[in-house]
Image (cartoon, rainbow, N blue to C red; front, side, top):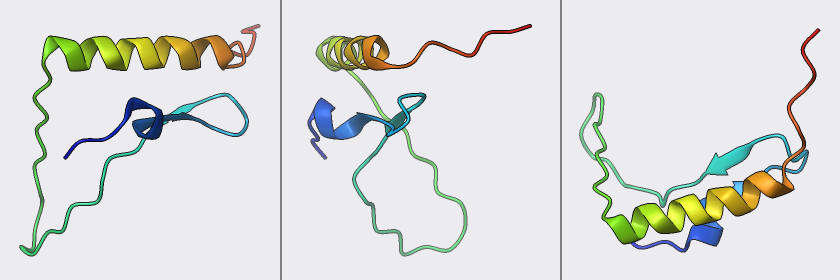
Length: 65
């Protein structure tokens, strides 16, 4: 499964959260499914770059009183 970072990580409409969207997986067995993802250094760098760009666009967190 290969997915572009721009498709995988998206900013919500209210700019308060980032959504991680993974491709659909068909599961034919009943019961819980464990998903493990192995990432190499290049994938980690791409994720961090994408999340950094999205964070700049996000609204600041609400003020705590």
